[in-house]
Structure formats: structure tokens, C-alpha cells
Length: 550
Image 1 (cartoon, helix red, strand yellow):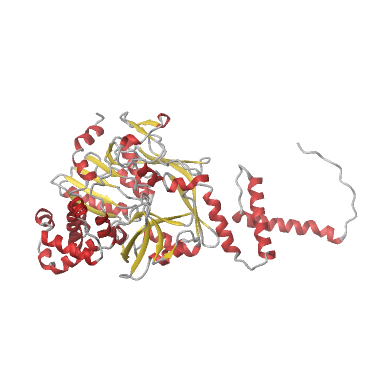
Image 2: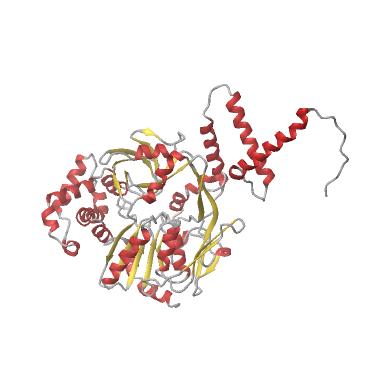
């Protein structure tokens, strides 16, 4: 109800008569501008308007009155980033000058060191080294913090995406020295990485392990992932594929539609694959299987670990909830927040979290986070390692309130990531300083390349099957490798050599295979001693029973 009062009679000057016209015109212009630049929600329009006016007012005072000349655009971008830190770990602002580079990871080839990264509180974190890239080959790992690039400190100096790209990308063949701090170590480690072309290929390998078992490695979900996967799957079916190992380890995610289309190849009917839930229902969505897939019946095992995130978790969660696959490995990352890219008027982009992902059973994929202690979120992987989660399933505690059931009634848990059906501890028995140094100084890769060059004709006349079966790293080769290690100032400790020798021989053979057969030879050789992969091979009967509801 509005109180009404009688208006007083006032003598108006010409200015006073025209003033309402001026105000009306100003309001009309304001409405037109505000329609595109400022649209507060219906939840708290007055609070949003006050915050907007306050920010504009302060920025104007700084621009007009502050004692020194300042770059107000930089100030506003700094304020925006600090504001987004109070929301969640994945909302972000990308200035216009960085946008093309930000898109390149998913959409094009480039020359660089091959890592997906995130900047948190002025520190550069490696989300995942790109499979087959130069960083992976020297031993850079998910969770590493890059402190220095070529001796220049980049941690704690308000670093931007643009600066990171400029420092890590460069001419093909050029070298970059990185100072890296591992989550579970106290002293930084030095790495030298040789830049090269980073391809947009995201399905790294697809081969037959035996006459009925196939293996496909998907490193991320980029704009060509589904087509690459479909091609590999078709080729394997022609070779007699009856059961499949799908490797999503260290897959940081990417495009949702490529993950759901892949899930549709495995899940029959029109079952739900994933759904999103946000404020109101504007961004709520349900994704269902739509087509008859090419592998809806065969036994399926999915490998995941702590580096599997986002779209890879959506795929694994859908297959687990519908009892279509046995999930093997360790608990996934837990990234279940949905960002929508919002183009801004100056060409910049706001990636704002607008909803959460849920598996078909209703599990939230997103692990807990507190905007007031965001550092805990970034340190989650390190804390898992510290608490023993990588080595013992018993260290993982679940809340009974987050208990859900699969289609066949199996118990699964929500509250952060996808927990595998079969836990496989991380194998660190071969981890030694010697092995780290051989990777860090690129001795393994360089020796393998030189060996391939010296034996090119012999290797090119050898089939992959023959190479896998008969090629052995000889004692002469080991001595040559250790000689190169000493030249690189690596201390060769006999106890460490004994612990790591099996892995060193396997990895040397794998790098030679990559030089000759690329990924089609690299992964089969690596998998020969991979505990996750070897464990999976013995679990197909269990996978079959799950799909049959037993």
C-alpha cells in the first residue's frame, strides 16, 4: 500500500520545468544501457545495485583524485579476480588478450611444454601433464607447483595467464628450466623441458591386448575426442574386440558433450547419463542416451585416478551408476561444478559456475570446498597423499548420508569424486632419486632417441608385435644409459638402481617404441608392468557379473 499526499503548488522556473525532461531522458538512456550492462537478479536487486554503484563510485574517485596515476582497468580486473575467489575454485575471469590462448588447449595445436595448469593465489599448479608431451616425458606430475621459469620467480608475483603462456610457450626445440615443488616433498626439483608441438589429439592409443581384449587411452575431452574414440573403437571391433579397458587416468576433462556421446556408445536404451542443477531452473539439464551404441554388451573396465576430473568423472559415474562398467583405480579428483562462458563487452570472458553435475543416481561429483579457506582445496591431492589415501582404501571415510544405489542396487557414495569399485594402491616401490633424475634431466628420452637413430633401419623392419615380444633392453644398453646419467651429473646409487631397474628398462623400451611406433607402441610397453592395468586384466569376470546384476 502506498501513502498518498496532496501536492503543493510550486512556482516553476524554466530550468525546473525542463529538469524532469532531462531526468527522463537520462533514465531512458540508463535503462537502455543497463539492459545490456547491468541486470540484477530478482533475488536481491537492491543489494546488487548498491554493490555495483559503490564499486563504480570508488573506481571513479581513484581515477580522479588518487595522488598517482593508476591503471583503473588493471585495478578492476584485480578486483574481479579477488571477488571470484570468494565464490568457488573454478569460476574465473579471462581478459580479452588471453582468450585465444586459453581456448587453444582444447581447440588447436601449439608449441610449448604440454601442461594444463591453474593459477591459484599467484601460484601456478599443474593440473595434468598432457599425455605424450615433453613435460610428461621428463616427469612433471599433476599437483606440481611451478615456482620458477628459467630462474625467474613466478610464484607470489601476481602472475597472469598471459605471462604463463609467454614463459612456457616458445620456439620448437628451445629449452625451458623449471623449478618445481612436489606436494609431498620439501625441496624444489629442477626440470629441463624441450618445447615442441603439442597436438590436439586426445585419444592417445587404441590397441588389442590379446585376441579379444582392447585398450583405449583418452587423455582429455577436446573438440575431436568423440570422433577419435569412435575411430579407435571401430578399428578394434574389426580385430575381434569383446572386452575393453578404457583408460581415463589423469584425464582433466573438457567438453561435456564428447563425454556423454562416448557414454552413449556403452549404455543401452534412453537411460540418464548426467544431470545439472543450479539456481532456479534456468541451467538445469538432463542428458540421456539417444543412439544404439557400438559397445553396449561387452565387458568394460574403466581406469581412473586422482587426476581424473570433470568430464571423465561424468563418464565414469554414468557407467558405474548403470552397472555398465567396473571402475578400477583410485578416487577421482572431484570437479563437478559447471561453468558457462559469458562473453563480456570488451572481448573478455567470464567463466561462471552456474550449476553442479550429478550422476544418474543423484551423487554430486564436486568435492567439498570452503571459499574462505580455498588453499585447502588446492592442497587436496597433497592431503590425500599425506593421509595415506593413495595406498590404503581404509583411509577413505564416507558419510552414510551420502550413500546411493546403482541400477542393480550396489552401494556407491557421493561427496567428492568417483570412488572405484576396485581400489588399486599407487605403486611407489620403484620410486628413487635415480629414477626421478633420469626423467628430470631427460636422459631416458634422449638415450632412446639416439638408440632409435642408430638402429633405425633394423627397427623399421620390425613389426610392433615382434618388438613387444622379443625386444629386450640389454646389459650393454643399461651400461650406456648409466654412462649418460653420470655425464649428466646424476649419482648412480646401486641400491636405488636395484629398486628401479625394472621400471628403467621398461620405460626405456617404451620410449624406443614411441620413437618407432608412436603411441601405438608406447602404451602397450608401459602397460606391461602397470599395476592398474595388470589388475584390470584379471577383473573382467567381475565386470561381467556387475553388468548382469550379480
